Image (cartoon, rainbow, N blue to C red):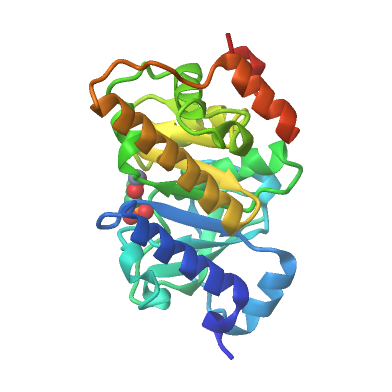
Length: 274
Ligand code: 13P
Ligand code: ZN
């Protein structure tokens, strides 16, 4: 029995592999974090390093995450390699009692640090934990090509993207009835993009990063992966449809979106409908 036999660690590794197989993680693209449950931390503790590494200030604060533990992908690590060598590619970090610093307690055995987007992940965990009454555990960032392609040709508004995605596949209004937020192009990896994404994630469970990728949140691995998958699939249909060059003869109407929401018992964001 070791760290890699723990179920939640197996799930994290499988998630990385699934993302790689979808083609969303060229090179070191993308990152994943999971907020551990108390019982999962207890299961892992026997395998933590004897001496944790030094505290590192994050430049952002999430008071509601003080004392929490996260599994995170390492900065510069390839999703492709995670399942081959999890202890080289992943880490477990502990958050301090102020909620402004982390220290590595397991993993990254050949050195390194958590993803450069850790400030974004951390702040978005903080916002989503508050917005979902503690239910959110997963934040996932990937580089799915079709979502990125859309950001070159559609106005970068929450409304335009939500409508385009809802109308490109009938399941979409059921899977993300709240729609998606859109963050304009920004330098990746810092506190600024973290704060801009947080503003969107107060309202949405997914945020598009223009010319970069997609950020999603959820309560578990299946739902979070499924959200990324559904949004990217819909974006692919949108891109394929536009690529025919043919005029659009029919689409899912706004009233049809309302009807889907009613049938499936979800609340679609009415302000985005005509
Ligand atoms: P990391 O390798 O630091 O996780 O960065 C990848 C990425 O996608 C940045 O947005
Ligand atoms: Zn990225």
